[in-house]
Length: 220
Image (cartoon, rainbow, N blue to C red; front, side, top):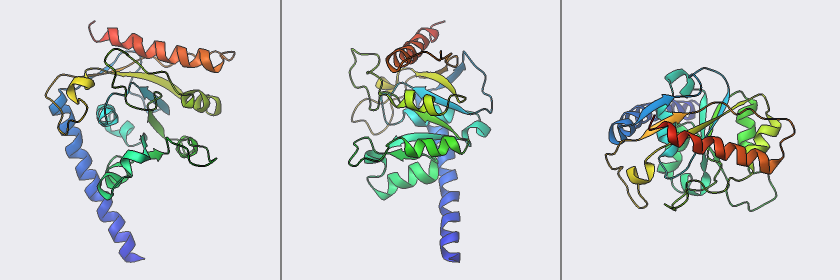
């Protein structure tokens, strides 16, 4: 029992150190800058949802949050990628304090259940409603999956904030291991104003439109 506690404590310490190095490296290599355009970096429960172009998207967004907010924010990641081996598992669980979900449902369980549990515990999350990376240069956003809508239905008091991450297709092109040294911007928009009579299709279209609008903010 004591051995297990010591091992967990060591893993947590190593995880925090790697997280520190990762934050510094991500911001240095991408030249990332944060713009809180539509809201302030406040310690309130939020769903930060963003466009998804590479495996480092959540790292860059997570690194852009102030320390106290970052501690209460869990990235949502795909288990088929992040749980594939021990090193990735260590990164997502011990370094980034993330939550993994099954994208390809193999049983009748609710794939959103792990997310609902952390929201019920009061954490904020980083969420990618496209469900997978958008590798098509001709399409700004893939069609949103229904997850964001269902989370809002169950947690209507949690703010939903769009976050546009620019340039990551060029910073981290498909197949790259090390990010290219290009400038990237993380733009935080206004929390969604959701009407009670919105149906699922209307909600998802509204969320997508509010996210794409932030692309223009980069040049203002």
